Structures are given as structure tokens and as C-alpha cells.
Length: 329
Ligand code: FDA
Image 1 (cartoon, helix red, strand yellow):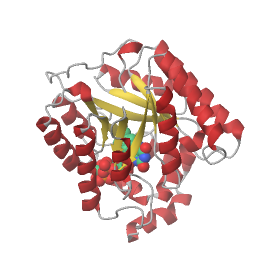
Image 2 (cartoon, rainbow, N blue to C red):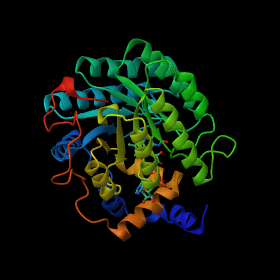
Image 3 (cartoon, protein in one colour):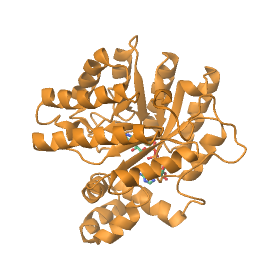
Image 4 (cartoon, rainbow, N blue to C red):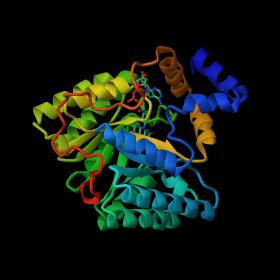
């Protein structure tokens, strides 16, 4: 951990809540579903899709997991009612993965089932490495029953290439990201260059196998490599999408849109924003460094990227009021 990172972790507990709130405002849509719906609407108006995340993880009681089911079901209903182009992303530990795997499966199944009825899609986020095997098994089991569910592969994990190859031949929908948790060297690459090379190789394997990939990164080098692969395989924009976090590097978002690609923003919201932000920052102070750097740099333009005027809309691009059936993963 660098000196700056150590400083951030030790001073975090004394940073007043309103300051954490002010910093996180850019990255979290708000406390309520109404706030999140408002952000998604504005994103859709700018030609950007969304995925809603009801903040929360690592529940310790089944009742908390039941609340998560209810919150996600309400989110799905609201998205359908408002005819918004957004799916949802959820964390298995918020649904009881660490309590009871059967309970977790039942809970997530209830969300996926409602999503299918509403013509929507559920992405299962990937948490730390203690969850990887269970999450992939959960995904495989759900996928036997539903096609409106996808999972995440982390490029920093040494096992990911094998995991992706094990999925080959089965219809699959994957988000590819670097990975955000602090993992031991025995399990994860530490060298940023190796993580990027693994990301690129994984992306190549996925796209060549016909997997629908959510390419989730703000690293312009990876966006560059991804565009080369998309071009070489002559993929149409509806065969993949780029994904970014709300509030991070809107200029890159605009560039991605201006190249005719589809873009989805991850939109977290909920009452647990403070615990979420501080825990994340403590777990991985690199995020705090990114946040501080971005605040200092203050990227130009609005924080919600929107398709620049005159930029080509990709084929199959979402409309501001996409009918439920037209929503894509
Ligand atoms: P990198 O870390 O090199 O960042 C590139 C640049 O982006 C930085 O220089 C910085 O300017 C900016 N940046 C990146 N992250 C930032 C942040 N949080 N705040 C401010 N600026 C930031 N991880 C995981 O383990 N499981 C998951 O399920 C998901 N899901 C997910 C969904 C989506 C849509 C995205 C975009 C990301 C995730 N992640 C994730 C997080 C991911 O693993 C990774 O930690 C971050 O995306 C940062 O990695 P980059 O590829 O952006 O590169």
C-alpha cells in the first residue's frame, strides 16, 4: 500500500459524513428508487443504458436478504412502469450467499423470474474470491432455467481463463472487468500490465466464442484493444456493449458513444450509501485515489455522458422509452 493510500485509509474515519456524501454524490444516484429512476431517465434521454444496483452486501440475517428481494422487485417494476432501458445488477452476498446457498438461490431466482416476466435482465456481480466458485455455480444453475441472467468475470483472477473456457459451448452473457477487491497474489495478478493483458485475452476468447460481453472498464487502453477486436470480428453494436460506473470519466463515455458503440452505466443507489462508500474506500484505497484525482482534474462537461450531437446512433440503440421487450442485457 502506498503512503498516500495508507493516509487515505487512516484519515477516512474522521472525514465528516457530509463530505463523504458530497464526494459520493457523483457516483451514487441517491438514497431512493425515485432518485435512481430519475438518473436512469436522464441517461436514457442521452442514449445511454443503465443497470441499477440497490446498495447492500454481506447480509447476516435471512430477513435482510428478503428485503433485498423486495427492493430489487420494486426496482424492476418501476423500470417497467417508466419504460426505461435499464436492467439490474445484484450481489449474491446481499441475497444470503454467506448464510445459506439454497436460500441465496431461491432469493435471486425470485428476482430473475420477475425480470423474465417483465422482459428484463439480471446481472450477478462478482464479489471477492471467497464467492467466485459459489457465484459461478449459482449462475450455471439459474442459466439452466433462465436466459435473462448473466455473471461477471474478473481479469485480475488467475483462474478466470479456465472459468471462461469452462463456460464455452453454453449460451452465456458475461461482464468483463478488472476486479475491485484486494486479493492475495496467489489468486490474482497484481501487475497492472498483466491484468490488462489478461483482460484483452479473456475478451478475445469471449467474443470469438460468440459471448455477449459487457466490456466494463474506464481504461482507455482496454477500450482501444476492445475496439480492435470488435473491428476484426466485424461485430455489430448489438453483439456487445461497453459499461462504465456512474460518474467516472464521462468524457471517455462520450467518446465511446461517438464511435457508435452502446454504453451502459452502473447506477448504485440506496440507504446504505455511506456504509458502502466508506467500506469500499477502506477495502481498496486505490478507488479513493481515483476519486480524489478525478475531483482535482474535474473532467469537463456534465457528469452524465450523452451521445454527442451528430454522432451515429448504433443499430439497435435504446430509445428513451424503450418497450420492455426491446431491453437488452
Ligand atoms: P483502472 O482502475 O485502471 O481505471 C482507469 C481510470 O478510470 C483511472 O485512472 C481512474 O481515472 C478511473 N477510475 C476507475 N475506477 C474509478 C472509480 N471507482 N472512481 C473514480 N475513478 C475511477 N468489480 C468487481 O470486482 N466485480 C464486479 O461485479 C464489478 N462490476 C463492475 C461493473 C461496471 C459497469 C464497472 C465499470 C466496473 C465494475 N467493477 C467490478 C469494478 C472493476 O473491477 C474495476 O475495479 C474498476 O472498473 C476500475 O478498473 P478500470 O478497468 O476502470 O481500470
